[in-house]
Length: 188
Ligand SMILES: CC(C)(COP(=O)(O)OP(=O)(O)OC[C@H]1O[C@@H](n2cnc3c(N)ncnc32)[C@H](O)[C@@H]1OP(=O)(O)O)[C@@H](O)C(=O)NCCC(=O)NCCS
Picture 1 (cartoon, rainbow, N blue to C red):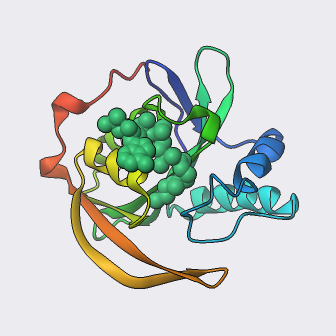
Picture 2: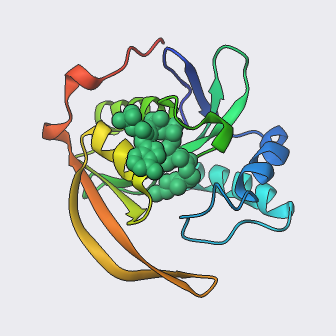
């Protein structure tokens, strides 16, 4: 699968490059950003290089796509979003995203998610996209609700991160419930 480049009105979603390693490490080593993540913040810069290598591997295997998110106006790296666990038989995949806290509250995650979902439903012909969020992560839950996801259940005591036990909400969005009216304008 070729990782696409997608343009929205304010964002550019593109394949990761080696040059993203420093910004990616800054993002994933930030304990505030990773507060409700399912793994601890990174402590070694080499983790960023491994993440980028894994992005290439995911693309080569055809199991998904992880895209860096840049702001269109100044090219600033804002974070990333991705589809993983793509199952062509089931026509399903999982959505994830992580944005720098300086960029929160501007609708960027929702805008990026919409673009990725449009690509997933139109180009990959997915039928179902799943997403999971820590039950304390109200901002992520809100993003998923704005995208049209339905909360389907709770995975009790799903994660233990640094000894802290947390529950996870499972969300799903079925293609026939994807609202075309909520699609962003995507430039070619
Ligand atoms: C979750 C995250 C992606 C949201 O990014 P964002 O660009 O700020 O999202 P948006 O601006 O598109 O939407 C956020 C929504 O959550 C709301 N929100 C933010 N904090 C909230 C809170 N504590 N309680 C309730 N709602 C909250 C915002 O008001 C907004 O909703 P609105 O448009 O109705 O006002 C971002 O906070 C992030 O990357 N967090 C760290 C990584 C992470 O947790 N990823 C998700 C893992 S499941």
